[in-house]
Image 1 (tube, helix red, strand yellow):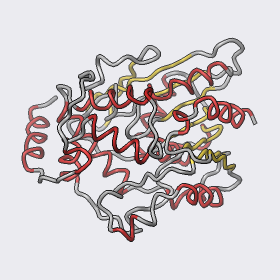
Image 2 (cartoon, rainbow, N blue to C red):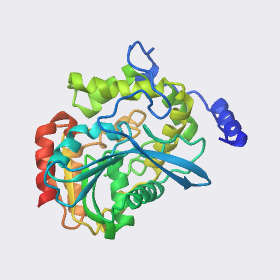
Image 3 (cartoon, helix red, strand yellow):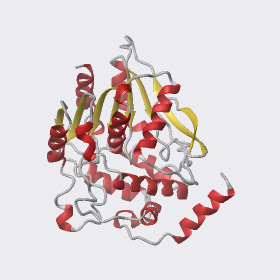
Amino acid sequence: MSRLKTSTLAIVCALAPALAVIDNAAADTGTGGVYGEELQGFDYPYPVHRFSFDSQGQTLSMGYMDVAPIGQANGKTAVLLHGKNFCGATWDDSIKALAGAGYRVVAPDQIGFCTSTKPASYQYSFQQLAANTHALLGSLGIAKAVIVGHSTGGMLGTRYALQYPQDTEKLVLVNPIGLEDWKALGVPWRSVDQWYQRELKVNAEGIRKYEQSTYYVGRWKPEYDRWVDMLAGLNKGAGHERVAWNSALIYDMIFTQPVYYELPNLKVPTVLMIGDADTTAIGSDIAPQDVKAKIGHYNVLGKQASKMIPGSRLVEFPGKGHAPQMEDPVGFNKALVEQLNN
């Protein structure tokens, strides 16, 4: 890293204004792991490979899993795109199911996330992340793939399919965020500095509280603790400030770069897989009550999006939240394989 980039990051961090965040304000009393800036020390279910490439004047590295089909291969590749508070590793059950159904499965960690580089400066856009993913697939000799995107990965998957329709065999959106434009609906804007201060306070207690209430409809299973430990350990490691800074830049991208208005432009076969009890909405924690009351209703958003996307199919999981692939892996993966094979 250059001396100029290091100095710039230090200045930005020093000038960032304080922002109280109730969910993450409590002291972290957890006893989980402490992981490196690229999630060193956290065990992935399959070997993590590295894809190095140049972008925006710097050499970056994406971690990814590349899992061969089990038994009879069908000649197809499924690319699994993770969400904002998720990693490639959180696709573990779906990787097993898809590989078992004959798919080659590639699960990358995007730049700024998990096992990948956390740049000191980067102009994040869904177009850039889509281009990075396309370059990764090109390096692996994959010309066409099924794109499966969850949460923020759904926004990225949509952008990927819009940008590379000829290389997208099918698009599957699993509780994608961005099925509404929060800013246009009245959610207040946060500066990157405010996001940064918020992210500096992230800890296991805050992560668990948020995910239980928003992702899992108030429910909790012991297996979710591993993913809380993953995020909390990444955020309290030696790369804490760099992780928080990249997270802030990514939140700004999510909030300011909606794909919602372009859903009618999708030209690839698309499947929406929606846990209809999901309430995820960026900025709902600071939105006025009247705005908060009208955002994040996936029982409505899924149906609206399905009507906007030409020829799309909607698969709903009644009573499930933001991550149906983790809440009900058997039921979800059965439905996923059926949709991909249709």
